[in-house]
Length: 353
Image (cartoon, rainbow, N blue to C red):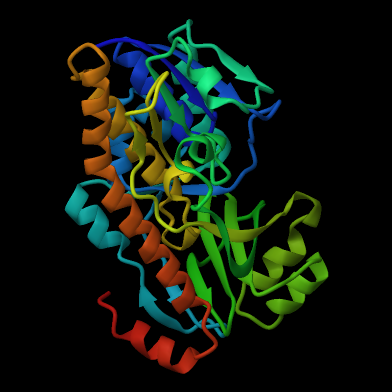
């Protein structure tokens, strides 16, 4: 079937959903509250399943033009001792293709190019949604892709689910040199990650209980193995991004609202299941949401009942899977950031290589 839809939010999930709906023949408008799209340089890990979804959306080649494979990474102690190897080889063997890493700006540009190729999908910046019912008037569908503080979610599902702090602070940045090692280093109550992002550049992230200045962050990782102190010393703190880690809690009972007029609503990405970044699945789950939702819409029979049925099919396919991923990521965060390091490190050594 075809219809008219408004997508609220122009992040990864929102843009991917807009592409999928337009490919299905829908008339689509995208609204974004920011006056400029966020193009900061954090790296996203794109699992093979999400790569396949991007192929179905027609942007897989653009992804691969700028992505780098992720094939060798370890979990280490602060002195550099390897505790375990991340299962990247197993992922590649099973899927027939490797995990990919891509800088957020490149993935965003690939999705924007996919939108612009249609020539008839308005992207309206500086549009803050305050009245979802008024927005939905004259629409067949509204998509809430507006992040962890989703106005669409609050309007249709109430405020019982919302951002919850997890008690740690995250810092991220890009170093303009290649790291000799990749993976994560786990200390007492803190950890540090290093991944490739493009040739000659390294994506890094640091999680600490609290650090308000660059000097405090550097002090938190002083004496850790190379290149962690070197990366913090060599990168400009003005380009670092700091945020308090949050997740969506409690889990929503549904990602869709089908019985409310004037138009049904579906949530995707962080609006539906914002999670801690420990599994590196935030972008992937948003892409898989967009793919599942738009596949269901594409084959739905015409009319409001067809849309409602498609939304219920999307909810069945994605909600439990995404919420399991979010729960697993939050559980891993607790495990990684514990101060009981001897017990934790002993358990990690038992992981299969």
